Image (tube, rainbow, N blue to C red; front, side):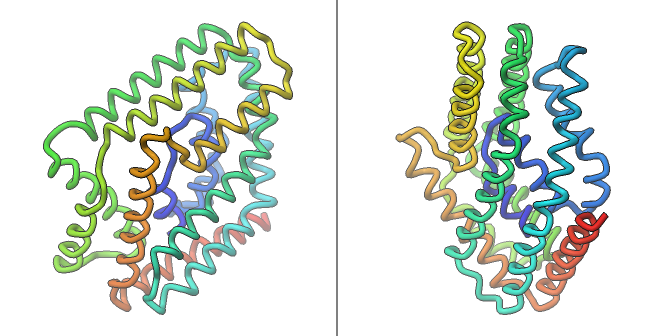
Length: 296
């Protein structure tokens, strides 16, 4: 459930994706397996964007390993508590959009805690990046954006609505099992009523990418203090976690979050007893995995 909510509310930025990776593991069906190789995956993922030089690789790997160790020791209990709260609410079938949005805020708070812990390591990375790595990062962003355009900006409005609904239902079915045709029809009607403007989402994504590239180039030429770099990184990542868009897009993003909260609440409230039991078992398994990993 936590990953279902989080994936539907994820921000677009390199730094945020790294910071949220550990949170994503809490929604993975193979949590223990994910944790076992999670530090390697994060290094591989980050290296795909930065293309670390040989002298950077050892200490970047060490920083990631230390972050995972801290996360295991201090954060998994908090995730288990959140999952337990969600599990306790499920049987009533009286979820509200306001409660779902409160869960969004809780997840952002967890991400903020992770951000603060990761900031020293992220500052090290930012200060070590070289001009050829900034160019590599730009190329990777451009490739990612092309993939986004092909997936989310092609076809008719109905095509894009259908794709959005398909992605939503993949997560819903993971948690609740199969849905009837009647349930899907009702959910699809509500899904299509939500605001949809993938061009705005891409524009916001590209704006944050440009902001990051601009900061990296500025630090290359102006050589600010470490404290100044950390402060700028913190502000940038908080804006990403909180999904603070450009002023002209604030109304769209607020409506999008409200629409997603309505969808999540509707799934819970229209689920059958068997579907809720399915979700409760999923949640319980994740709670147990969090507790086992914390004690390891």
